[in-house]
Amino acid sequence: MPTAGPSRSARAVRVIAVAARDGAGLESLVAEHFGRCPFYVVVVTAGTVIRAARVTANPHVADQAPGTMLRFLRDLGADVVIVGAVGPSATHDLRRCAITEVTGAAGRVVDAVGAYLRGAARAGHATSSAAGTPR
Image 1: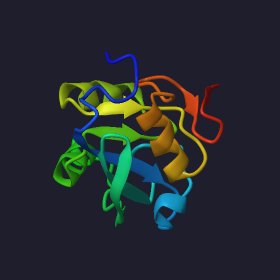
Image 2 (image 1 turned 120 degrees about the vertical axis):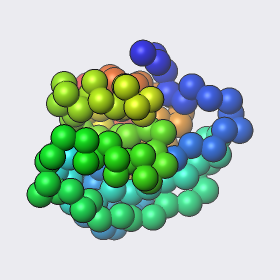
Image 3 (image 1 turned 90 degrees about the horizontal axis):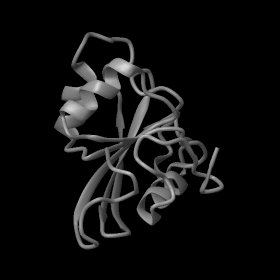
Image 4 (image 1 turned 45 degrees about the vertical axis):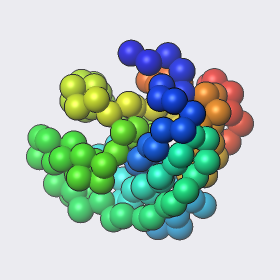
């Protein structure tokens, strides 16, 4: 399991899917639940710079059939998912699909992404994105 933020080179392009409570883009608040969040903010980064962000409604918010969220995230091109919490089954599936999971995020999407890009949010570890410090 990766132990720090970005595992690719500083120039790598990454697609980060952040579970969001609303459709306010980078200003949205991070949602607590991986599969039941109403939106994802899809953030494209190059190194430590946010290049683009778009809001996508979660079409599976009411449909929790096995594999639907993983297919959705793969279709978005996600390399990383940032969220408040992920259940053990989804954690296993994300790892199997080589999608890095960053849990324990809270606060604004832009802050959670920034914490990850700075290495303050660790894969699989709880981090408060608002403060950038472990909870």
